[in-house]
Length: 433
Image (tube, helix red, strand yellow):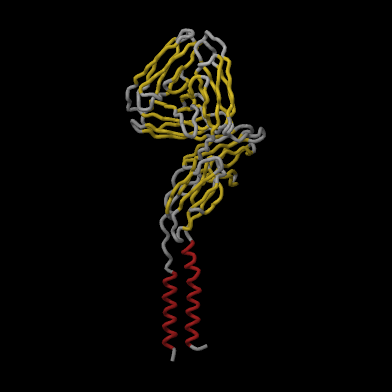
């Protein structure tokens, strides 16, 4: 082999030496965008590319060509959720948590009564006096009809999309009720009678006659108004509350589905009223002191919702909560409902991956099990828990951020190797004739 060929061989060896190192640098760093939705099972797209169904993780190669990440989450029967993220870097920890809103479909209730002229309420919302036709979302609806000197009539009717359901009520004469006609300035204040949330002003409320009733009127940003009244049989008492502004904090809460019991710091505040996709019925809760409060919503057949909020003086915080339907727990198994802050943490039971928070499991065998939560950028959380058959354990975990490790020092090997190879090449060239 002559010297020229020797130089070519050495150059080829240099190319082989540096090719793997270069490939490792280009694709070595990744991060994950974690995507969850309520309800789960929604399709996930990133910049128009399908990534799977929720919950899922989108792996991003941060050393490659930067792209703008645009997350779209869609599911039949729900409005599409969109969140623009942009470019993603290695040290970022990104979680996309989508609460999907059902697409409302409309049908009609044709309501009549005997006698006519009754006050008609559909899902707690005043619609007018009978006879009337009311446009409502598809599904089941509760109907209430009230008229002075008559017993209140209650019923339930189902409405299909584009169809009209006939409802006729015959009210029986009554002498055991009276009425409270409540107005406020400003309007849309929440009315509580004897501690129970009834509706928003202006409102006519039927109550038992002959006994005192405590009426409390609450509006976010105003001092609560309170008055005790006694109503005679068949008569109406009028209350007009001119509310005074307040520096206290308030919450305005609505839920889907409606009728959820609301607790603030463990105190029952009433049940949420009916809300549709186009009209949210927010219940005002307060006054509350500035600071941190625990919020809990409960409804039979749905997982308990818990959250914490930190309110500032004069703040009015609006919350719309979508409840998750509870999966039945077989009598021979135990259940687990676990959520975390932040959400999207990986859930392991006895080191077996089960999904992402928040989630509900109903197939845990009775006995002691190891729970483990892992989330990028946060310390692992683990706990030994004993499960009893037929019961559900609820866990709300606040994960602690992990300390950021120092950036690795680049190895000097490639530089030293190149310097040595350069020396060999120079020696070979000098030996050439």
